[in-house]
Structure formats: structure tokens, C-alpha cells
Image 1 (tube, rainbow, N blue to C red):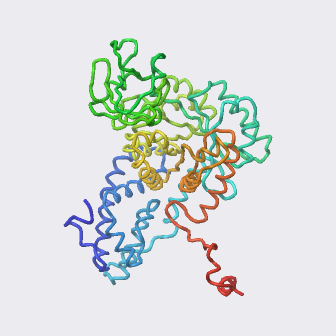
Image 2: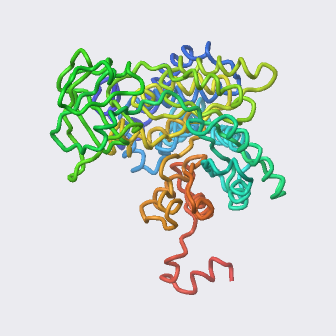
Image 3: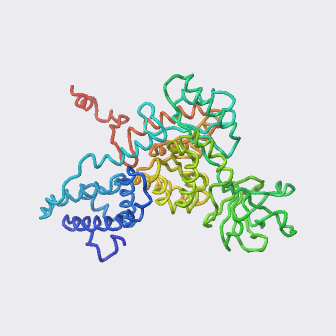
Length: 517
């Protein structure tokens, strides 16, 4: 039901009486719908401190069902409180607006509405800050956005890497359990702890151990992997290379054969981080016939072990593999956070929570990091957060690499904003990930677009950098960018710090008045 076009809503206009009636009805609507969601979620929430956050999330979801643009314009025209920054404190925003409108219109019910306390406005952001501190540790130099660094394999050989990033300003590290072995991970952890003692700053690097999850990757016949694919070429995506029928067409299989049988006619298929796109034009007993729709002009080789994405196909895959379950014994022992790849439903989250409980019966389990990397995970995000944060400290990682392929780049640009808003409403920290300052980290010089991207990342509670020879330089640059940006903005709210770049336009007398001289 949209405010702009339904007869059930009073007409939105500049008249304060009608604005008051509209806001009153909108508040009643979000309470009704939001409380219904809370009643649905509450039985699954065992962590009492998350209940106020869940309630705020429910009200925010109920509010954002409506197209608020006409109402926003009229509120702004009257200089009234905007709903556009209400994420962390939905009801408090409405209470303030209701009290102001009741007073301005001389409403007989003006005594019913009172302005909310400052505590009710700050409670949401304080909850996010507490959760971020629990997951990512204490921030440095007053910087509210932490920096996370992916640990390279060579970090298992000496504590030098950990010492370097500690001195550069990182607060936490990520160990990717898709690579190396438990012995290597243990060596990494030992060197991280040794580096903390060597640096002597009394700082402790928080460790995220990222479960490998189900790897949906390509499998190619060795003799075909050197062939280039071009737009309009045809290729067979088969269940199994060994049992597929003889054909002159190039073939590719998946490391998880079951995904091929879930494809439908006209489904999209993307390979190698979106560098090759295809569409299903025929379903066969041995798989699916694809036509290449996107490829570089010079063609592209498709080799084994490359990413395979099926956007628009709700894959039924168990996200917790046998390898993950085996790794959990060590992960639960050493990790402050567990990264969950390919999570798509509340049931998936419960599966990991049950598996973790087997290893942490005598202590608190590690925090959860939900990696949002599929279309289905985006659609299920509220349920994922409630299941995770309803039981233990949790965060959301915007895994922009796979997500961009799954959603398309245009939709990705919009969706990363919506995920930030939703997580703020749930008082859940966000990790901004994938290709942050990638050129600087790998080659020693950032691109201008990367610097702008890093500035946008200041709205998250943590930013993840990938490994590379210039990682220390990336940490130091990111540290400076984040510190500068937080002086200007927190989430969507501008601080309106004085702008000094154009101060000379007003002459010396202006500066003297400002300084009180």
C-alpha cells in the first residue's frame, strides 16, 4: 500500500493538519505490521539484548513497504524531521515528528505525544557500536570503522606480516579456510599472537576464520581448456564429464554436479567472475546446452576451478560441507568470528549454530559473519539476521564479488546501499568487502575510483582488504580516508563539519568573528 496512490491514506499535502493525520496513520500501520513480524520472530530469539534491535528492524521493514517519496518532499518543505535517517531508531523518529506536528497544529491530542529522550535516539547506534566492538575489537585513533586484512599463506612462516599490519593500523585479520590446511592456519594464529607480544601495544588482533563452503566451480577437459569462447558460441554444461555423450561442442561440468539439474530454460549462467555469460537454450539428459551471450571481443579461455554463478536459480545446496564440519573443531578453538559462505536461509544459519555448539559446550561460541553473496541471501536477509543475532553476536559481509555477478552491476550498486540500511535497522555491523584499494594493494598505486569506493566504505563498521605486497600502504591510506570521512558523516547522516576550503571567500572578518576576536 503506497501513500501516494491509495484512497485509505489522507491526501499528502503541505497542510500541517493533513500531514499530522498521514503520519499518525503511517505510524499505526507500521506498528501493526511490525508487531506481527516480532510475534513471528520472538520464539526463535534466545538473546534478550537483541530483542530491541529485532523490534526496530521489524518496524523499519514495515515502514519501507511504502513509497515515502511524496511524504518526504512535504516534510522537507516544512523543515520538519525527515524519515530518511530513521534506520537505527524508527519509533523515536516518529514520536519526535508526531509531537512536533501535534504542537504545531494545536491538536487536542498534543499532550498525548511527547518528544523522545536523547537516549531513545542514540540507543540503536550504541547497540551497533557495542556489537562492532565485540566482533572487531577496539578501534584505533577514534576511528569507528575497523580494518580487516586477509592473511596470505606466507604468514604461517613468520610473525612479520602480522607485526606489519598491526603497526600499520589494522584491527582484525581474515584466514580463508578455502586455502592451505589446518596446520597452516594454526601456524598463522600462533604468529599473530606472537606478533602482538612483539609489538607490545596491548592490542589483540581479532581473527575471522572463513569457512570454505560449497565451491561451485568449473571442471574442464584438459584438451579443451585452451580453446577461446566467443559470443554466440555454444557450450554444454554437463552433470559429469565422464558420462556425457560424445559431442563436438566444448563441455564444462561443475564441482557440485547437482546444480546442473536445477537449471531451467533461459536461465543465466556466468563463468569466471562474470567474464563469460551464457543462457540455457536446451535442457538435455546429460545437462544443458548454453549459448554464450557475453565474452570479450578477443574471446576468453574457460579453465577449470573458475567461478560458476547461476543468478536467478535458487540453488538447493547445503552450505556446510563435510570439510567445513571437520574444520570447525580448530575454527571454534581459535576464531573470534566464523565466516559463513553461501548461507541462504535461516535454516542454514541454524545448521552452523548447531554444528558450532558441538565444539564450544564449555565456552561462548565465536561470532557469526553472514556472507551475502547470492540473490536468495539478499531476499532472506532479515530472517538470516534474526536467526544469527538472535543467538549470538553477528555481522553481515557484503561479498560484492559474487553478489555483483548474481545481481548484475546496476542492481549491485543499489543493493549494497539497501543492505547497509537494513543492517543499521537491525543494529548489525557490516563488513564492506571485495577489491577495496585493490590496485594499491597489488601494484602500489590506487585508482581514483578505488579511493572514492573506500570513502563510501566508511558507512560500514569494518572494511576488508585482500592480500598483496603493498598491504601496509593500503592499511595506512584506508586509515586516513576513514578518519577523514567520519568527521563528515555517520551512516546516512551528515555532521556538517565546517568546510574550510572556501573560507577565504568571506574574508578575514569572518574568521575573526568565528574565533571570537
